[in-house]
Image 1: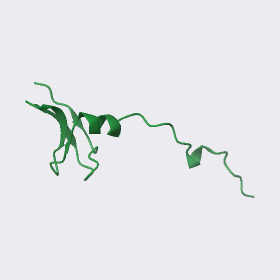
Image 2 (image 1 turned 120 degrees about the vertical axis):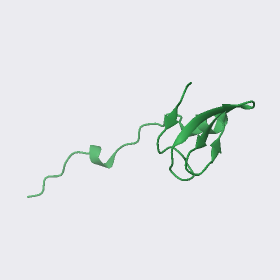
Image 3 (image 1 turned 45 degrees about the vertical axis):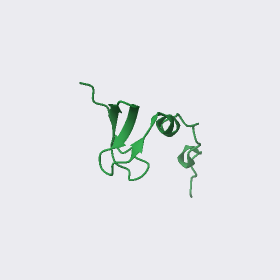
Image 4 (image 1 turned 90 degrees about the vertical axis):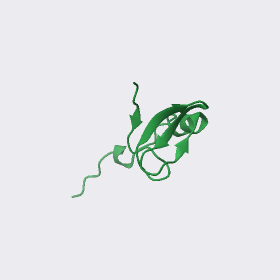
Amino acid sequence: MFCHIRFKACRKCGGDLSLEQDQYGTFFQCIQCGAVWNETDTRRAFAPTPQRKSVFAQEPVLVK
């Protein structure tokens, strides 16, 4: 049996998503709140995002 869980990935409550499958297809379902995310939703949600420039990546400022 295959068990795939994405921890803290639910967009609704921040809970854990479990990969499920039924006669209609594959989907993620939140273990905590029961929200269901289909294949289209999960592609958008888990797509790699462009790297954002961090505030902490700047040169350090020396204070005298």
